[in-house]
Image (cartoon, rainbow, N blue to C red; front, side, top):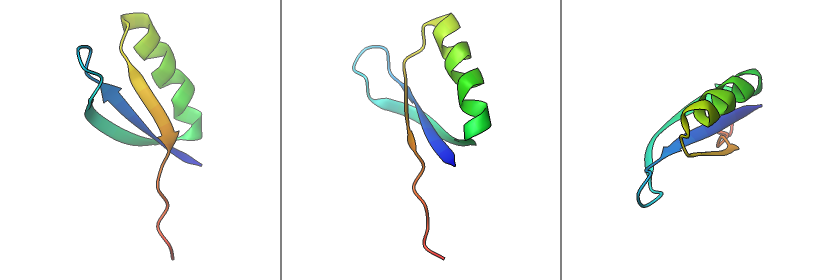
Length: 50
């Protein structure tokens, strides 16, 4: 499964940028964000119909 991780603005909470990662990468990104106090939003990545 893939997830979209959005980095949020510290002032108003709007999305500043985003990246799509696999499930195995999510924990490392969460740990890194927590260590520097960064606000993030994680949601399942949109899937495209094949």
